[in-house]
Amino acid sequence: MNCIRVNTGIPYDVLIRRGILRDAGAEIKKVKPNTRLAVITDSNVSPLYLHTLLNSLEQAGYRDIPSFTMPAGESTKSLENAGLLYQLLSQAKISRDCCLIALGGGVIGDLTGFVASTYLRGIPFIQIPTTLLAQVDSSVGGKTAVNLPTGKNLVGTFWQPSLVLCDPDTLSTLPEDVFADGVAEAIKCGMIKDAVLFDLLAHQDPQTHLEEIISRCICVKRDVVEKDEHDTGDRMLLNFGHTMGHAVENWMQYQQRHGQCVAVGMVMMVRAQVAAGMLAPTVLEKLLQICQKYCLPVSCSACWEDLFEICRQDKKSTTKGIRAILLRSIGDSYIQPFSFEEFKTFLRGGDQQ
Image (cartoon, rainbow, N blue to C red; front, side, top):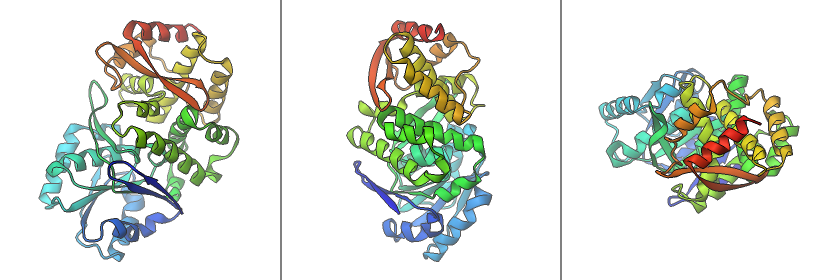
């Protein structure tokens, strides 16, 4: 079993092992031995894994475990659904000495973390991610959020989990496009900090290297988050491809998967860098090839002007401009501030390439 320690303000472990879901109760008992638990999941995950989790918790001695199943999909990540969960938790008499468990993908992890951080001014929560995207990215680092109609993740908190349990076996039930969604985030990690990971994804079958891929991605995120837990500096590097990717998601009214939109965002940024003479064309070629391998989109029907206007609402925007994430090469990234006019010119160059 891989155990990765994340030394944030409140440290915690990320455990990666096939079949660990069946032993979740025993692992949770080590960090929350005398705690009442409640599980939040979604309608896709519940019939697959909720029974296994509850059975494991009961075998470990936990009793009276309420579970709440939310509708699957990005629209669940809303203030309205956060309010619904507050009511359900209150009715179930969940108190400050209780702990929530997020069983699902990034939507459930973000929503549960946001609710945990704000219900009764904050209670602990545990992440059990069941998608590749959540295992390699969103379950680690403590960012929680819900969406607004004007943009993604605009209301949120920093609230670290008490434990993260990654079971690669849960990925076997993912449709191909959902698995590829997570690969896009793994590609991002390779692009910004780990050229070896990028090459592994480009040339190997990821299904046979899942533990290594998940571990490498989490190590990239851990190293960045430990230096900048609250996203005021280097942690912004993790948003490579996300400024434009979130704009694509918003423009498509969240009808396209997050990783697919991030892939489009990465290509748009790299294409603009190449057009500006800031990056070798071979980087774009390699990115396009790896996206093709995983059937990830590299463009969308939205015009860049519309996406630019949405970018003004991005979390990395200021009143004066946008802090974009750029590359020097694969595995080497940096933060580049742009004024809004400079960023518009930058995007226009990529569109004209």
